[in-house]
Length: 193
Image (cartoon, rainbow, N blue to C red; front, side):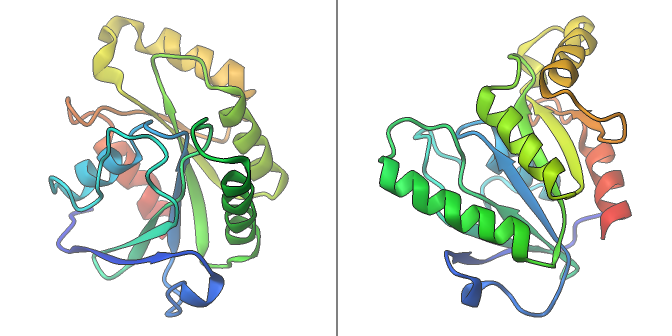
């Protein structure tokens, strides 16, 4: 898949704000600072359409990016960030749950985890939640450039075991730095949209 156009459309917090033309949506979920924005920017080959931040917990809405006028990437608020108040976290949780369970345009959730470390309790909880609601899942294991290539498969194995991953959910090793995993990600996207 070649990306010919990519644009930021809206930051939505309520259902009424979601785009309504019915294009397929791929939601990107993961803990704060795991590399969701870098994943988007790498795939669309743009430096900073999706804003990266050194401050975790920055994304507090559903950020819609229209790709090739064919589908949306939806960057959802990162979870597991401690400096956000419990009230705020509860509000995000409600918004996220409503979006993921009631919104028909979602074709899959790309669950973004850090390849360097075993998935967190929050990652496991998100995976369980998505499985419970039968939402298609693709696991994207980012920051592969931070570990030697020879150890990638060992880390993938830990990721699969920690998440108790179903065999039919793919894991894509990804690195924005090394440009690894882009073709595999597009292959999954093509199947979905």
